[in-house]
Image (cartoon, rainbow, N blue to C red; front, side):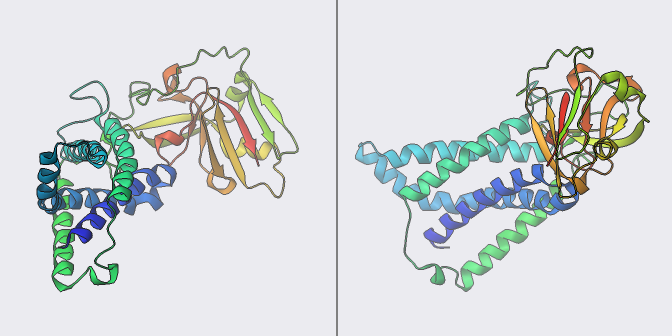
Length: 330
C-alpha cells in the first residue's frame, strides 16, 4: 500500500471514529445502532493498520532525529500518536471488559477515551496539513493489490469486532455496562460531573411552560404530584458507559405540553435544567417521555435530578435532563 493511501486511510479512520462516536449521542438509539457497530469496526481497523503506518514513518523519523534540528511537525505528530495510542488502548480495553466505568479507577475509562479522542482529531488535522501529499493522484491510489489489502483489513476488523462482542454479554450495543436494574435510587449518579448538584427548595421551585403556547403555566411541585401519574420501565444509558433499567413515575411530558395549547406552527420542545443544561426534541418525538418525580417507588434523589428529571425513552442519558425547571415550545 502506498504511503499516501495509508495516510489517507488513517485520516479517514480518525474522522469516522469521531463522527460515529459523537453522533449516536444525539440520535435515537433505533437510528444510531449502525453507528455503534461502525465505530467498533473502524477502531479495530485503525489498530490493525498501524503496522503499515509504522513502516512508513520509521525511516523518515530516524532521519529527522539525526539532524538534531527542531521540527514543529514532529511535535504535532508526537501528541497525535500518544492520543491515538491511548484512545485505541482504552477503547479496546473497554470492549474487551478489562476496564469499566468504576475500575480500575473510580472514574469512567470511557470518559477518558472520549476526551482524548476529541483531542486527537485537531492534532491529526494539523499534522495532515503540515505533511499533505499530492502524489500520486487520488485516482491512481487504489490498484488491485491495494484494494485487496483494504478488503482484507475490513474483513479482519469485522471478525475481531464480532469476537470482542462475545465478551461481557450484559454490555449494550452502545458499549455501556450494566450497573444494576430496578434498584430505586441505587444506580450510578453523575459521572461527567460538569454540573454541580443544585440545592432546590420545592416551595420556591416552579416548572415553567412557555413559548409558542396559548396557556403559559408555572406548576408547583405539589401540582405535579396531583397530576395523573404515568409509569414507564425505561433504560437510562449514560454516555459515561453504564446502563440501568428502572421504573420511573411522574407527569407525562406530552400531556403537560398539550395542556398549555401549543400553537399550530409549533414543532420543537426544549427541556431546560436549573443548571442551564437543555435538550430540544421534535414535538412529535416526546410521546412516552416522562417528567419523573419517583424512581422505583422512591422520591428521586437530588443526585438523580430531584425534584424533576426527564425520562427520554430511547435516548442516551445526556438527553435525560436533570433538575428540570423550564419547558419551552417553539
